[in-house]
Length: 223
Image 1: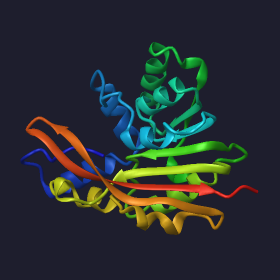
Image 2: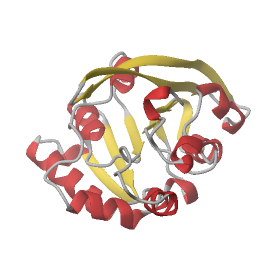
Image 3: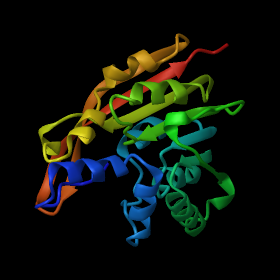
Image 4: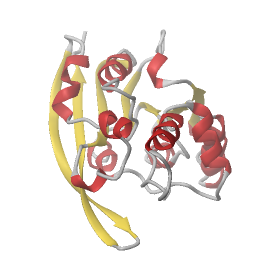
Protein backbone atom coordinates (compact mmCIF):
# COMPACT_ATOMS: atom_id res chain seq x y z
CA UNK A 1 0.00 0.00 0.00
CA UNK A 2 1.29 3.45 -0.68
CA UNK A 3 1.45 6.28 1.82
CA UNK A 4 -0.34 9.60 1.96
CA UNK A 5 -0.94 11.89 -0.99
CA UNK A 6 1.54 14.50 -2.06
CA UNK A 7 0.01 17.96 -2.00
CA UNK A 8 -0.78 19.65 -5.28
CA UNK A 9 -1.42 16.62 -7.49
CA UNK A 10 -4.71 16.25 -9.27
CA UNK A 11 -7.14 13.48 -8.37
CA UNK A 12 -6.42 11.84 -11.71
CA UNK A 13 -2.67 11.82 -11.04
CA UNK A 14 -3.33 10.37 -7.61
CA UNK A 15 -5.36 7.55 -9.12
CA UNK A 16 -2.65 6.85 -11.71
CA UNK A 17 -0.01 6.73 -8.99
CA UNK A 18 -2.24 4.52 -6.86
CA UNK A 19 -2.88 2.14 -9.76
CA UNK A 20 0.89 1.74 -10.21
CA UNK A 21 1.09 0.40 -6.66
CA UNK A 22 -0.90 -2.64 -7.74
CA UNK A 23 1.64 -3.49 -10.47
CA UNK A 24 5.14 -5.03 -10.34
CA UNK A 25 6.88 -2.06 -11.98
CA UNK A 26 5.56 0.31 -9.34
CA UNK A 27 7.04 -1.81 -6.56
CA UNK A 28 10.31 -2.40 -8.39
CA UNK A 29 10.69 1.38 -8.58
CA UNK A 30 9.93 1.83 -4.89
CA UNK A 31 12.38 -0.83 -3.76
CA UNK A 32 15.11 0.48 -6.05
CA UNK A 33 14.71 3.99 -4.66
CA UNK A 34 15.79 3.53 -1.04
CA UNK A 35 17.92 1.45 1.26
CA UNK A 36 15.18 -0.40 3.08
CA UNK A 37 11.48 0.17 2.60
CA UNK A 38 10.01 -1.93 5.45
CA UNK A 39 11.19 -2.39 9.04
CA UNK A 40 12.35 -5.98 8.57
CA UNK A 41 10.47 -6.96 11.73
CA UNK A 42 8.02 -9.86 11.40
CA UNK A 43 4.34 -8.95 11.30
CA UNK A 44 2.71 -9.35 14.73
CA UNK A 45 -0.21 -11.47 13.50
CA UNK A 46 2.26 -13.95 11.98
CA UNK A 47 4.21 -14.16 15.24
CA UNK A 48 0.97 -14.68 17.19
CA UNK A 49 -0.10 -17.52 14.87
CA UNK A 50 3.09 -19.29 13.83
CA UNK A 51 4.90 -18.85 17.12
CA UNK A 52 2.85 -21.71 18.57
CA UNK A 53 3.14 -24.06 15.59
CA UNK A 54 5.54 -26.90 14.91
CA UNK A 55 7.69 -25.69 12.00
CA UNK A 56 7.02 -27.27 8.62
CA UNK A 57 6.77 -25.79 5.14
CA UNK A 58 5.50 -22.25 4.60
CA UNK A 59 4.64 -19.96 1.70
CA UNK A 60 4.58 -16.17 2.15
CA UNK A 61 2.87 -14.43 -0.77
CA UNK A 62 3.60 -10.74 -1.22
CA UNK A 63 6.77 -11.20 0.84
CA UNK A 64 8.34 -7.87 -0.16
CA UNK A 65 11.78 -7.53 1.39
CA UNK A 66 11.38 -10.82 3.24
CA UNK A 67 11.01 -9.86 6.91
CA UNK A 68 8.41 -12.57 7.54
CA UNK A 69 10.30 -15.13 5.44
CA UNK A 70 13.49 -14.58 7.44
CA UNK A 71 11.60 -14.83 10.74
CA UNK A 72 9.87 -18.08 9.74
CA UNK A 73 13.14 -19.59 8.52
CA UNK A 74 14.80 -18.59 11.78
CA UNK A 75 12.02 -20.45 13.63
CA UNK A 76 12.88 -23.60 11.69
CA UNK A 77 10.41 -23.42 8.79
CA UNK A 78 11.30 -24.29 5.21
CA UNK A 79 9.96 -21.14 3.52
CA UNK A 80 9.13 -20.01 0.01
CA UNK A 81 8.91 -16.25 -0.36
CA UNK A 82 6.74 -15.16 -3.29
CA UNK A 83 6.30 -11.68 -4.73
CA UNK A 84 5.64 -10.05 -8.10
CA UNK A 85 8.54 -7.59 -7.67
CA UNK A 86 11.92 -8.87 -8.83
CA UNK A 87 13.57 -5.99 -6.97
CA UNK A 88 11.77 -6.94 -3.76
CA UNK A 89 12.79 -10.59 -4.10
CA UNK A 90 16.42 -9.62 -4.71
CA UNK A 91 16.39 -7.57 -1.51
CA UNK A 92 14.66 -10.38 0.39
CA UNK A 93 17.32 -12.86 -0.76
CA UNK A 94 20.02 -10.48 0.48
CA UNK A 95 18.33 -10.17 3.86
CA UNK A 96 18.01 -13.96 4.16
CA UNK A 97 21.72 -14.28 3.34
CA UNK A 98 22.63 -11.70 6.00
CA UNK A 99 20.46 -13.51 8.56
CA UNK A 100 22.13 -16.84 7.81
CA UNK A 101 18.92 -18.60 6.73
CA UNK A 102 19.37 -18.63 2.94
CA UNK A 103 19.57 -22.44 2.86
CA UNK A 104 16.06 -22.64 4.40
CA UNK A 105 14.48 -20.36 1.82
CA UNK A 106 13.32 -20.49 -1.80
CA UNK A 107 12.02 -17.60 -3.91
CA UNK A 108 9.16 -17.53 -6.39
CA UNK A 109 8.26 -14.60 -8.61
CA UNK A 110 4.49 -14.69 -9.02
CA UNK A 111 1.52 -12.31 -9.04
CA UNK A 112 -1.05 -13.24 -6.37
CA UNK A 113 -3.88 -12.27 -8.73
CA UNK A 114 -2.91 -15.03 -11.19
CA UNK A 115 -1.28 -17.32 -8.62
CA UNK A 116 -1.53 -21.05 -9.35
CA UNK A 117 -0.09 -23.43 -6.75
CA UNK A 118 0.01 -26.33 -9.20
CA UNK A 119 1.26 -29.38 -7.31
CA UNK A 120 2.94 -27.34 -4.58
CA UNK A 121 1.47 -27.42 -1.06
CA UNK A 122 2.50 -25.98 2.28
CA UNK A 123 1.66 -26.44 5.96
CA UNK A 124 1.24 -22.66 6.33
CA UNK A 125 0.33 -20.13 3.64
CA UNK A 126 0.48 -16.47 4.69
CA UNK A 127 -0.17 -13.10 3.13
CA UNK A 128 0.34 -9.80 4.94
CA UNK A 129 -0.93 -6.45 3.68
CA UNK A 130 -1.30 -7.69 0.15
CA UNK A 131 -4.17 -5.67 -1.33
CA UNK A 132 -5.73 -6.41 -4.69
CA UNK A 133 -7.87 -3.70 -6.34
CA UNK A 134 -11.67 -3.65 -6.32
CA UNK A 135 -12.35 -6.37 -3.78
CA UNK A 136 -9.96 -8.76 -5.52
CA UNK A 137 -8.73 -10.25 -2.25
CA UNK A 138 -11.62 -12.73 -2.24
CA UNK A 139 -10.20 -14.26 -5.42
CA UNK A 140 -6.65 -14.03 -4.07
CA UNK A 141 -7.80 -15.87 -0.92
CA UNK A 142 -9.32 -18.61 -3.07
CA UNK A 143 -6.06 -18.98 -5.01
CA UNK A 144 -3.90 -19.00 -1.86
CA UNK A 145 -6.13 -21.65 -0.28
CA UNK A 146 -5.23 -24.09 -3.07
CA UNK A 147 -1.62 -24.06 -1.82
CA UNK A 148 -2.53 -25.20 1.71
CA UNK A 149 -1.78 -28.85 2.50
CA UNK A 150 -4.48 -30.98 4.18
CA UNK A 151 -4.53 -30.04 7.87
CA UNK A 152 -2.58 -26.85 7.09
CA UNK A 153 -3.35 -23.20 7.82
CA UNK A 154 -4.09 -20.13 5.74
CA UNK A 155 -3.41 -16.71 7.31
CA UNK A 156 -4.47 -13.58 5.42
CA UNK A 157 -3.89 -10.22 7.11
CA UNK A 158 -4.68 -6.80 5.70
CA UNK A 159 -5.63 -3.25 6.50
CA UNK A 160 -9.21 -2.77 7.65
CA UNK A 161 -10.87 0.42 6.38
CA UNK A 162 -10.39 3.13 9.01
CA UNK A 163 -10.12 6.89 9.47
CA UNK A 164 -6.32 6.51 9.53
CA UNK A 165 -6.45 5.93 5.77
CA UNK A 166 -8.82 8.72 4.72
CA UNK A 167 -6.06 10.47 2.78
CA UNK A 168 -5.50 7.50 0.51
CA UNK A 169 -6.88 7.32 -3.00
CA UNK A 170 -10.29 5.81 -3.66
CA UNK A 171 -8.74 2.73 -5.29
CA UNK A 172 -6.64 2.05 -2.21
CA UNK A 173 -9.59 2.40 0.13
CA UNK A 174 -11.55 -0.06 -2.01
CA UNK A 175 -8.69 -2.56 -1.75
CA UNK A 176 -8.98 -2.69 2.04
CA UNK A 177 -11.18 -5.35 3.58
CA UNK A 178 -12.78 -6.76 6.70
CA UNK A 179 -11.84 -10.34 7.56
CA UNK A 180 -15.41 -11.61 7.08
CA UNK A 181 -15.45 -10.26 3.52
CA UNK A 182 -12.86 -12.90 2.57
CA UNK A 183 -14.93 -15.88 3.74
CA UNK A 184 -16.55 -16.45 0.31
CA UNK A 185 -13.02 -17.15 -0.99
CA UNK A 186 -12.52 -20.14 1.32
CA UNK A 187 -13.10 -23.55 -0.32
CA UNK A 188 -15.59 -25.92 1.35
CA UNK A 189 -12.90 -27.96 3.07
CA UNK A 190 -11.66 -24.97 5.11
CA UNK A 191 -12.85 -24.15 8.63
CA UNK A 192 -12.41 -20.53 9.81
CA UNK A 193 -10.44 -20.30 13.07
CA UNK A 194 -10.10 -16.50 13.43
CA UNK A 195 -12.24 -13.93 11.60
CA UNK A 196 -11.73 -10.56 13.24
CA UNK A 197 -10.20 -7.11 13.29
CA UNK A 198 -7.28 -6.59 15.68
CA UNK A 199 -5.91 -3.24 16.78
CA UNK A 200 -2.27 -2.58 15.98
CA UNK A 201 -0.13 0.43 16.90
CA UNK A 202 1.63 2.07 13.96
CA UNK A 203 4.73 4.19 14.42
CA UNK A 204 4.32 7.56 12.72
CA UNK A 205 6.54 10.63 12.75
CA UNK A 206 3.80 12.43 14.66
CA UNK A 207 3.60 9.63 17.25
CA UNK A 208 1.86 6.26 17.64
CA UNK A 209 -1.40 5.72 15.74
CA UNK A 210 -3.86 2.89 16.21
CA UNK A 211 -5.08 1.03 13.13
CA UNK A 212 -6.97 -2.20 12.64
CA UNK A 213 -5.69 -5.39 11.01
CA UNK A 214 -8.23 -7.69 9.40
CA UNK A 215 -7.19 -11.25 10.31
CA UNK A 216 -8.49 -14.40 8.63
CA UNK A 217 -7.03 -17.69 9.85
CA UNK A 218 -8.51 -20.90 8.45
CA UNK A 219 -7.58 -24.59 8.61
CA UNK A 220 -7.91 -27.07 5.77
CA UNK A 221 -9.50 -30.38 6.68
CA UNK A 222 -7.36 -33.50 6.84
CA UNK A 223 -8.11 -35.74 3.89
